[in-house]
Amino acid sequence: MALSAENQQPPVIVVMGVSGVGKTTVARLLADRLGLPYAEADDFHPAANIAKMSAGVPLDDQDREPWLRALGTWLGDRSRDGSGGVVTCSALKRRYRDVLRAGCPDAFFVHLSGSHDLVGDRLAHRTGHFMPPSLLDSQYATLEPLQADEQGTVLDVGADPETLVDRAVSALPR
Image (cartoon, rainbow, N blue to C red; front, side, top):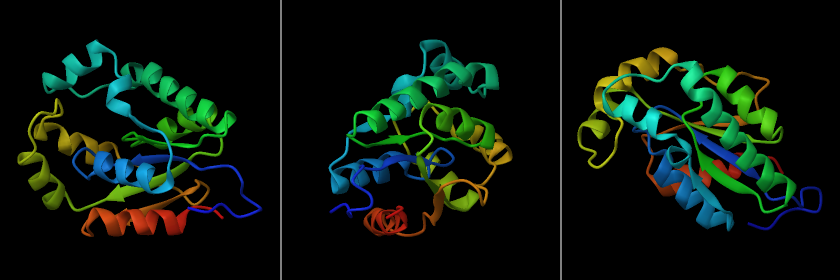
């Protein structure tokens, strides 16, 4: 992606949404397309969080706080060093996104959104991930969509990943 004269800084992007919407797939493709570093938010979770989720217990805000701060720091570092970056993060609540923005005020959110049935079916067929399908209901109950004052876009995951990446790139601030 060629950056315009007005926007020489590579973007810092959070691909967000409930588990199973395709955050990792879209974020990796987006990072590749834009030539940006990529990070998987799951890699920032402490072992206690992974154990809790693996046992089917949703994380609470206290569990998430250090995880979100670490992600915000990663984003802020990518913004400050001018490399840009793409990270996955559920970022389900406005409060969580606020923690991320505290570390990186210029973060752009790509909210991948899909019906409960579609996402539930994807989760039921996914292997090798610690997030059990039984927690999907709690994620939808927690989800607070992007608000008008939040920099980002909402994309319907009914489209294929390449189309979602095209739409995300088109939605980035110029």
